[in-house]
Length: 510
Image 1 (cartoon, helix red, strand yellow):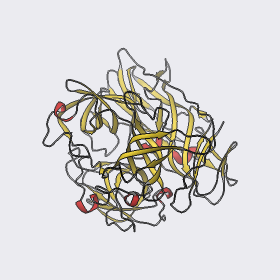
Image 2: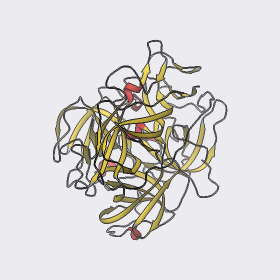
Image 3: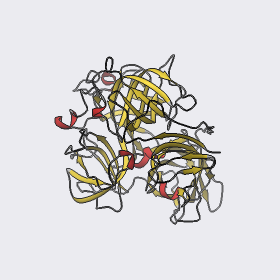
Image 4: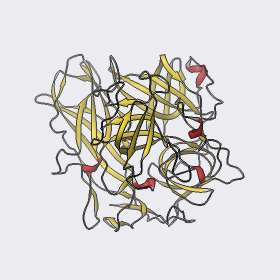
């Protein structure tokens, strides 16, 4: 079965309504696994290599199991605690799948079960794209739900578990190899393609080479946003889209103020002085080899649990309206307006001039230059907003999707957050700047458009320093290919001529 939602571009203007087709969504759940004695093996997942067409805004999949199969003996099965992931988030970030706590020593192959792919994309071809009975006209932003499933074995990867060891496996999902667009415009997903080779999945042992982690650190899980619960030095964030994550504050934890500057004032050196139970916060955590987490950085976002929606901008309509593809949300504790919204849903956002507060920027500790910051911070209309930006809004009113009209919301707070994308590096690079092009076409720029990217240098893991992964400490990305995955603040002017449009919190060399 295929579901389709669509939004048609007219230049970069929005119509008052957005067209979509109604379809059915199916999703599976899951829980945790492991126990007893033996090696502890933790799993994370990343994504790379986007297809040339269409231009993906969201690609959700259900990951229902990860299985370690030995040459003899019993298989070890992990059921991910958060079974649904948006792979587009993982172009720069990592998602934690879970830890098996009792893996006997031996050599294992790795198999992963996938199902229920849902894709949100801009049809940047000149023809209609179809999937079953669903269709997406040229220039439209559409959502397809597909029926593909599969359990691929990761080729050419044998994992050796050491008795009583503490180890990790990173799973790499190749987006391009999973998605097929035929010459007739038929879009399909296949988790077990006979070609190309390498297949959809590959794997690597954690920590990744040149991950800039140390000692017993396996991976870094970044920008996990949720509602705060505190228990001594432990903080638990609960997210309706990503589950829960618990980590312990340590002496090296960085504490950053919220975008408004009113919460977690500097200098702050203790968890309880920065965040409180019931607040909404974002944190970066280090996955330790024992399967536990320590807080690298934490910042409050809201003083209380509210209806908060985050998404990628794909169109602008006038000075008080824009449209996003949903990437994350937080719901109010009671009487939430947005309970029915899901990752990948399309949403019209209205920001009435009479009620919207000046815009905010979530710098997450980066020393963004004042000239760049002012392109968004303090503004009040869509002249500061551009397709490709990640925007978080506080929802004050909501209308559900109905018929041919997508959902809409009214917001009083607009905050710039983190765009995630894959791009090519071009020209000379320095420790403090790189140039990239070939950004996704939903940015509504040409593929040759250059985005100069600010790299914040310093001690790895320190506050305000760009996290470099796959890049030797103190080095720069090599010219593409391979491309780089970026998590950036996108700050630009109306003529798209800002000297530093990208401020990088993360650069991953694929």
